Length: 123
Ligand code: AMP
Image (cartoon, rainbow, N blue to C red; front, side, top):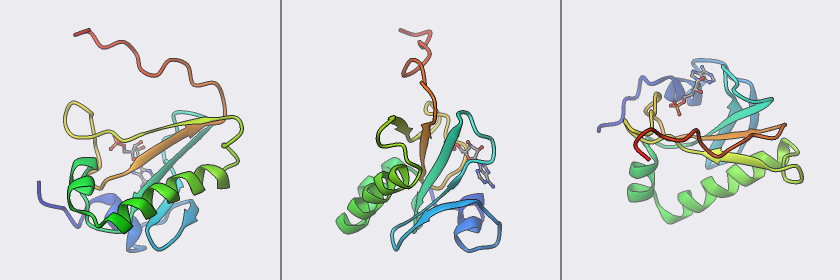
């Protein structure tokens, strides 16, 4: 899948659409999700044209991959979540129900989050 430079997160990275920024460095930008599913719900996106987790881990340079995942941890610490705990996930592709085609990690926290996942019917 080719990268769509008009996706909403590309526009946020270019500053064309505002966001509630939490953390930023040379590798990543983190901002609050517009439709939070937990008391804390933040998205972390890499600074680069990556469609998905699959695209990112196949095509990004090692320095970018390392820098991005360090930024995820730094974002969680910026939010004060490292002691109480948190969950992060990356919806990927159709079965993963990824809606925005720019790789992103969700960070959830601020309360007990319950089970990892609602049981999927095919189990
Ligand atoms: P996903 O299903 O993993 O692609 O999730 C996309 C997420 O982006 C959803 O949780 C949306 O609420 C969130 N989202 C969409 N547009 C914006 C926006 N302009 N600012 C912040 N979050 C957004």
